[in-house]
Amino acid sequence: MISVIGAGPAGGYLSYLLSNKGEEVNIYEEHSVVGSPIQCTGFTTNLLGEIIDLKKEFVLNRIGNIMVKTPGGQEYIKLKHKNIVLDRGGFDRYLSEIAQENGAKLYTGHKFVGINENKIKLETKEGVKFVKSDAVVGADGPVSSVAKEVGLFSKREFWIGAQGIIRGNFDKDMFSVYLGDLCPGFFAWIVPENEEIARVGLATKNNPKMHYDRFVADKGKQIGMQGGIIPVYNPSIKTQKGNVYLLGDAATQVKSTTGGGIISGMLCAQALCEAIIGKKDYENLWRKKIGKELYMHLLLRRALDRFSEKDYDDLLSIVSNKRVKEVLGRYDREFPSQLMFRLLIRQPKFLKFLVKVF
Image (cartoon, rainbow, N blue to C red):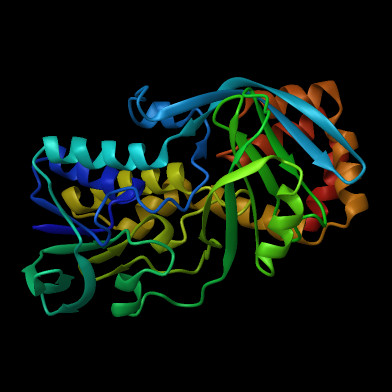
């Protein structure tokens, strides 16, 4: 019996993979409904379609253009492959549903509170219960109770995200990114679901509400509010202790440039499935699969954190080069090592900014 704690994208997808291999899987979700509350922008690259079959019921929009705005100007990038706006709640529920179709069992309203030998302890409306488990997977988010219980939480940093659902007038084919002191230490965004509704938000380590209120003041009418914390990738984190594993946000397997963790978590779920089925080293598998890229994202984030507003404007002037735009639009941002190599070939001036990375 494999117990998966958390029915987000990483936990749901892992449960699908394991149950598809004939493993007995129980999914335990703390909340009464899978996919609620929503604490994610739900914006991914087209790579998601290579991992799982995309369904119309959870794909709300596809976006083909990016606008990057700095204090001194803005530039537009056309994407070769349109990015995807997900109904995050619907997407999470879909993954848990296909896992159940393969035989996995879902238990909502079950909160993980501890491990006692080979049993996990859960709190439910009916009281406390213990479940015997051969393996336990903590896919329970950035403040993972599983990680804390087994001593794998270690030192962690977080951004605090604030996102409003805004009714206004939007270009449904344009994802907008705002860089600079408007949102120190990260960026602000507008992700349209359609012409009238967009997800407008930002993340920062300090005073998110102040920065958020200032950013959304002229964007339209707020009809909903979401928020949550985003883990900063920790390359030194340990993600396995005996038969207990960490996955997704619980393992800080997140892109530090964007805070995105859907695809990276699902790629790590593939590695964990292989490790459990084949009795292989999970740490080695996921780091070989995506560890180098997550580390590059972290280095780029550290460099961006040292940027002045003039640095952002200088970077934008390089981005305005036609050949640079072609590279940015063609290659997937999930894999920055490949992207940076191609950018340097097209525009050697990027070396100025890579010095800040290393």
